[in-house]
Image (cartoon, rainbow, N blue to C red):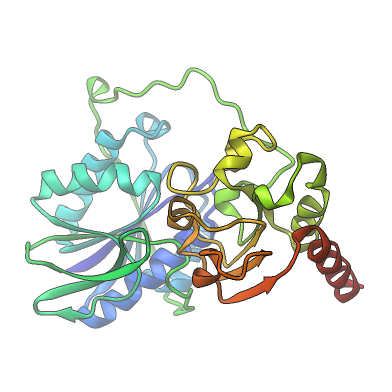
Length: 322
């Protein structure tokens, strides 16, 4: 028996998210006395695949079919179901991102498996199998029991530290037959963002709210993000006003992110906004209102005018980077 973990790749390369998933799977495998099998779909070089072994994968199953070049949740769920059955996997782990959220329910139906979505720690108990997750937009925590024979877990991003546990991983190239009629998704056009870090990939995010008072004041936000090697974001009112593009809107109705560091500048911290950023490892808030809700979620806070504090913060970072 093995723990099966689905690892996404982007243009043939793995990112931190995939290594986090394998590290988590290795922790679960240690608890259950089993091993980790990592599943990769698409064209990935052996040298890249073997990186998964550095984080605990004992075996890497590589599926590279032309029919899988376009993500189709129904087809991918079928592939995972077949691989998990062949490996006798009782625990399947995916990321709690758009891909994992699309696959997990379909896989659950196929395997009659219970789902623990958005877990953020190793299982608290194996009998009964109990997982830990955030609930109520991050304002509370829940202990969920999964009583099915097969269990599916989706891991919240940045909730588990990457751990190096090198294995001499073996690579198993597998071909899966897929009927053309099964593939329902067709991509007609692809537009890739270039020259700018994707918000969902950033380890550091600098975000602004209405406390910035005008789109003309956004320069220090962008400058600080560039200095820190991060991305820029904004609250919903800012994007609704047209100050910043909707692609930067974070929150329950925008992008849900989990960077290592989230700097909220002039953001009061409405419930909807906190729901989208509460999984950040560290939150730094700058606001004139000492009673703003954002300070309840932040590990560090500065009570002050963002337009005065931010330039000083930029200068401090420049000084450190000299």
